[in-house]
Image 1 (cartoon, rainbow, N blue to C red):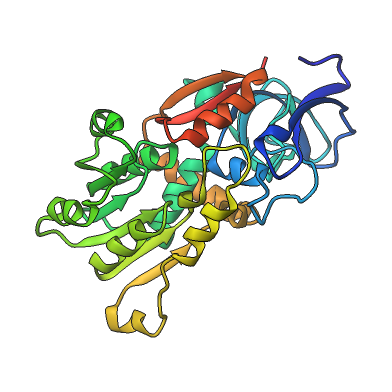
Image 2 (image 1 turned 90 degrees about the vertical axis):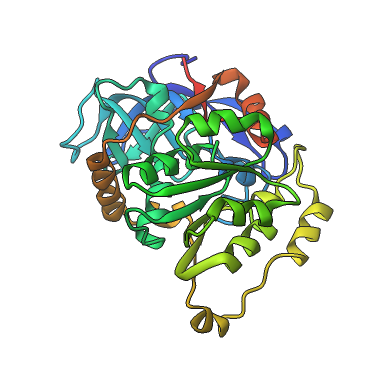
Length: 343
């Protein structure tokens, strides 16, 4: 892939359509003080990548850019000021866009050593979705051992990591999935009750709860799948919103009529009712946490103490197939993490 020691290859996209992706060679610049250059070996895909490429993610650049929020690879070189890493180290990291590339130049504070037993695919599957699950559940959601939580898209990357964290805390988990084909897999991953989202969702959820209180909802979908669990929350319960999958379509370009329909039908919460109902509603964007590097490392240390099993990688693609990987991810047919391998 790399033409020589001074060039790399990356994907660029003009926001607006998944059809706008293209590859280009580029000159590797001189490293800034405190930076490290990583030879990328694997890239983790996230739903935010799709929204960013379609021009729907506010935090993304408006002009052509290189997407990608997480990766794993080998340290190729380091600049002055880098003490914790050296050439040859195996690492995983997060970045505010730019991971769809043969090389990543990054502030070394955003790197973590890859565990010896992990391959690069596992490393690329870990940071974004595991941090999202943990920060949403423990920091924002204030989840306590033994409580009950609802996890939307439980067969996805965030959902599976959330299940592991909940299991480590002895919590009762109810997960939702988009199709019956994912039910057996999600049960095998340790989800106590698995619900296929549909017209009977409210009655299914009530049945799954039995006489339990619902303490936490991790919501990545919205619409009725937000409103119904919100109504059923126990006192002091919380909903943590970290995504809006209902706006997604299976086309390269956003469907504006579809988006407007869901926008005008979005749930509306009167803040004056929150004290009366004694419930909490919080939102989470990983880009914010990226700017809090100290907090991010605190979360990673706390996660290490839980000794979770490695993330499940369900789909693997080659670098030249990256746009196809995004389209599969967009289809809703994936289970676990989607990873792109880089030669």
